[in-house]
Image (cartoon, rainbow, N blue to C red):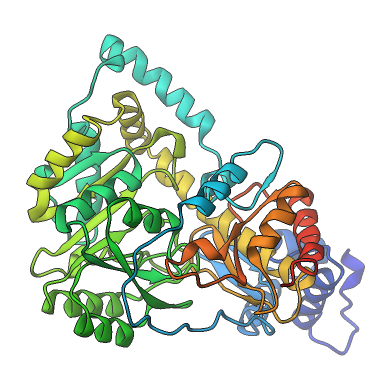
Length: 480
């Protein structure tokens, strides 16, 4: 490899290093999302100085071909010159009753089938599994807890875990009283309790469009009406559409994922999140923030939870450890604020308590520092996986496909174009051993029939890339 760089060449040494990186990329020896050799390792291999390699990497970064990540090194980026974002949809004029359960049930059945490539399930932890760490931690907890480990826990949660969460919110300047924080069975129960606290049957709830189908099904089960607010694929809810909606409709609550949206992966900047809270609170509309992906950001900093900008106490926060530590543990939480009394009563009525041994294990996992170390690794892997998936999709899918560029999380949103049927593709893919999620279930008003959601929250490998190639072949069979 040292002969690749010639000191007699008319090009500067750093330019030759840049050309080498480009050639490795073009030959498939270095793929989007992969880490470049360290400065020292590359300098040694090429027999050049470390400053020469650093200048080459920085120049590639300036050209948008390489990305520097703090304390992680340099990574090859996918070329997004032909990447088209999903289009903006129109604001709905009316709120609607929801009826999506049948198709959602089909999708759930598919994603839990054995021996399928699970693009259909958003399980980011699979990219950096925690099973061994949590197993060690749980054994330690069981030796400490003894018979207490199999008992019921406190109705509103394990006090030491609640204390850990309260301390973490202090980092954002958010003071949370222990009585306001309720540990739940995953974020879905937190969302259900939050909605029950602030709405009644027949009320209008504003949701993002597209919106995570679990929220749509929850609204249906509670007898509420959904009003879809269009979502910008880059920075979240269009505030002008939301302003029009709260003016035209008696909206009781909004359920938004402002940090990282599922399925688009948009990230709302803090200044816009502040405007969102001000807009809603000026109309006395409650915001329920679904913040399950908040810690899986690719931006320089994590988004500040919307609760930090509330002056009237009309923001409730729902989150969980399902996307960052252990989906099977089913441990989430709700910061209910002034609705805490109602929230605690609903928690008691719905499930009495959340698994004590799971809460205790997660507390020890956080206290040891393993949780934060693994999240850092998880973000790195997800970011690399995203770059690889976008690159693979650009090679395999029709050039007309419009692909989102997620700012965090583990899923990509693809609009195949009006000529394609995502439900048909879902069925064809499943027959080929691949699960995907059709865009149709991310809307209460039958939008997104031409869209699909794919998860890159997987251990990456050749099997994944071959599955994307196969999907590209099946897309052509999924025309209407």
